[in-house]
Image (cartoon, rainbow over all chains, first blue to last red; front, side):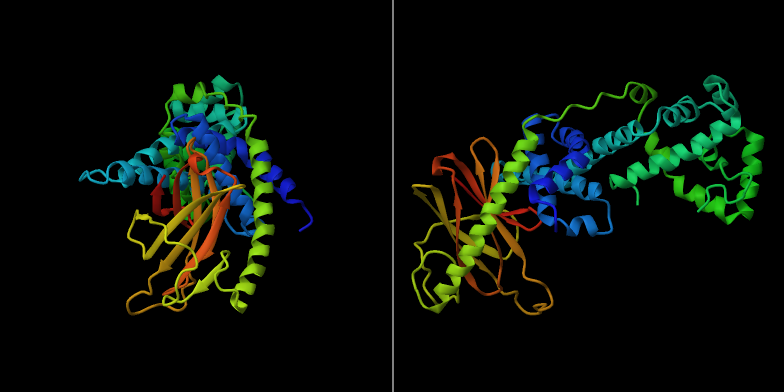
Length: 170
Length: 230
């Protein structure tokens, strides 16, 4: 391995820290100090696994998101077992994790949309969010109907790819 | 794969799943799907996306929040984390050498030794750690303030599973972490549990004992299994 360990960490940081930071802010309910700890711990774990992680089949980003999520959920469980040991509590960690997953999933979709080109995003706004048929979308966007169709086609492919990278769709 | 695969309707898949084709075109496209496996496969690949898009409202999409800038402290902390880890790795190599010396016969040395259960532990007994889950691992730990920080002497045993032990299973890996009063987490040791054996190992941190809020044993996945609050 020619690269120095610090260079490897810088590379992980440059490629993934921004996305992971956004994700961890949501995970922690915008607790910036905690989010930074989780990002740090996640990237250090990733760094320790290099180069295996890089050469594995899955996306590195999906791995990072999963690890960050587990760190936060483990922390809840620990807190609960500290503070509520004597309380017979019905709701369990799974419920909390599910709710968080719902919020996160919405954020992941929003984040994936921001990665699309403005043209791709615009066509999804017209055809999906405004519910317009292709002809009206074409008029509003000032392009031929065929262009709306092919932009929508490539927009959904790009969206799927972005979601795959974040581990949402297989 | 060519997107259009030579098919005139090859780009209609998205407009179709988004519900943006006018009725006549939609019917024609559905008839086409019955005869064109490529288009049918392409529709299947994107069929789940409208459901995900539906998690957001038009307002939310149009006012996409600006990404928040990364904290300036993150990269320096990561670099420091890498350096610390490397120092620890070098030290771990030194520990392994020391352990080899212990095995030769320097009984009572404090560093790292694996003993069978009937041998007395080399360090004084510490406080029992509280199990957080139903794992087969038990441990006690003693924290000792020393000039360079805090020494953590851990005595840890991992039960031999009763019957049906899968010898193919790799031994589980655990780590010892300390959590500081201000919430930072530092890993101070990792090891493989050997079924039926009691292990004595020593972790070290530059933190003073009164900076340590709690000590945890965690699995390789980071799940805490044992804990002691300071």
